[in-house]
Length: 277
Image (tube, rainbow, N blue to C red; front, side):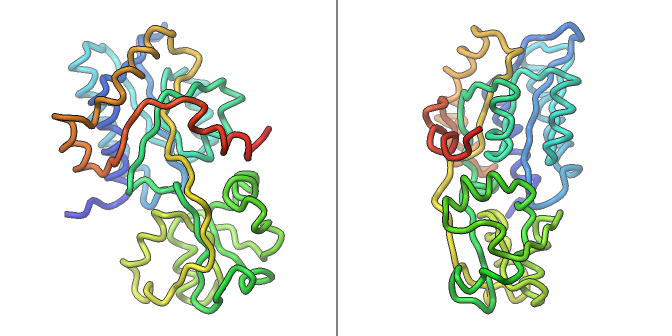
C-alpha cells in the first residue's frame, strides 16, 4: 500500500535514527535532541511528528537513553530556533537547508539519505500550454521553492534562468503550484521530483508536461552539529553504511530508502561551490 507523504518520509528518516543507533550523548539538560528538517514536503509535519516520536522512543529504549527528543520540522526558521534551544548533535536536512545552515552552524557531513519519497533531488518547470523554458519566461511561474532564491538560481537553475525572468507566484503549500497550472491560474510552475510524482494523482495531471529539468542533485544530508563529540561522530559514521544491508534491507525498502551511506563534504562539493557564500 502506498504510504502518503510526509508519513513515509518521516518513517524513512526516523528508521534511520533507530536502525543506526543514532544517539547523541546527553547534554546538561539530559535530553537527546535530533533534528529532521524536510522543507517543501508534500503533507503536514503534524502528521509526521508522531512517527518520529515513536521511532525515537524505541531508539531511546534500546540504547538506554533516559530522555530523547526527535523533532520533525519543515520550516528553516523554526529549525534554527530548535537548534539554539536544544543543541542537537545530529540533523537530517534537505539540501537547500543544509547549504544555508552549513557555514553558520559549522555542520559536518556524515552521510546521505536517498529516498524516492523525500524529494528535492531534481527540479522541473512544468506547464500545460508552453512547450519549453523560453515559453515560460515573461509569464507567471508558481512555486513554493522561490522563497530561497539563492538556492534556485545558483544550484537549481545554473544560469538557465533567473527568477526575474518570470512573474513569480510565491506559494506556501507544496501542491498549490501544480494545481494552479491545472486550473490555468499559473502558466508554469517550478516543482521538485516529489511534487512531480504527485501529478499522477491529480485530476488532469497527465495534461501537464515537463518543459525544463535541472541536473540531479545530492540527496538529504546527514550532518553533525558541533555539540557531537568526535568519537561519537566516528562511530555513527562507521555504522551508517550497514543500516540498509542484510537484516535492515527489508525495513529500509518498506519506508522508501534507496541508499544510506557514509559521505563527506566532498560528496556535496559541487553544490557547495555553486551555492557559494
